[in-house]
Image (cartoon, rainbow, N blue to C red):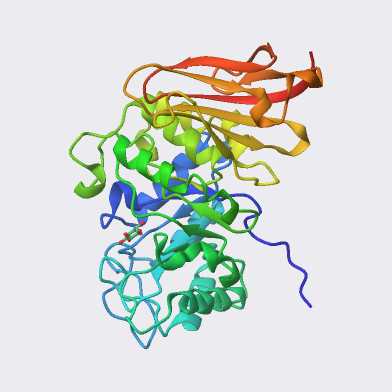
Length: 385
Ligand code: GLA
């Protein structure tokens, strides 16, 4: 029996073409994004996968096989995959459990095993698998099982990224399909309301996510600033502020979502780069135990202000404090509520993951003012106090 090391122990990290480019993709874009992944230090920070989303193929299969769009990818997909691999990165592609992809290209329905074989031949390391055009009478869970089985037996390690937008009670059956991550929400848009809605919708569902099968809250919009060929994603408001992007990143990180960048990494601002490469926040996301956080709301402002607490391997705790309100608000975290009563004679040594410094030892509680739409991200160590 083959003894292989399983894929995706921790949430995958990478870049995906959809949020910024949607249908406007080609080999040069993918290759230059791979170059930038290295040059900008994103790869060193942990980002690994370069993923082509929808719209990469011709509209018709040839001899039953998917074929790359000959204008967008004149040398085929394998040469792009080879290029990405030559940079030390991994390569991902997209298909769909239905008869067509969401943008109307051929889907993998009833072609699961041959498509998995094609992807393996091309050197694909990651497959995002969507849910559009699923025949009414086909069972969704069964379709993900099929592709799961096909990928597991195609002769190559391919991460299986399920994308059914949280439909059909996906949390309850996705793990058994063999998927390594699963989309739990509808598509993200580059605005604060969307970020907020997605985060709130997944608080309380942390127990469904864990090692080898992660709750995917959708690709990041960090750094897009309204720049997208897809008007629906760009939205009319011109994106988020850098503060909102920082909070978005912190939420996805502490909630153990995959971190798939969606902006144009060839044109990142310094602020965007700083957010995306924050090693202390990435370490929280990539903690080996993958324990989901729990939520403690601010008692007198529960609608707007809350903390997420996540136990880390080795005894530390990640503490994120979030203010979704439109003015500065206070969060007062009582240590009693996280298992540390005053009578223990212990306190928390608090390290600020954004300032990258220890701010002190606190007993009983940590009380901070959080500006509107901002957050605090801490790593806490239990110490005698
Ligand atoms: C769906 C997915 C998106 C993207 C598009 C492509 O909407 O949820 O992430 O892959 O399809 O058409």
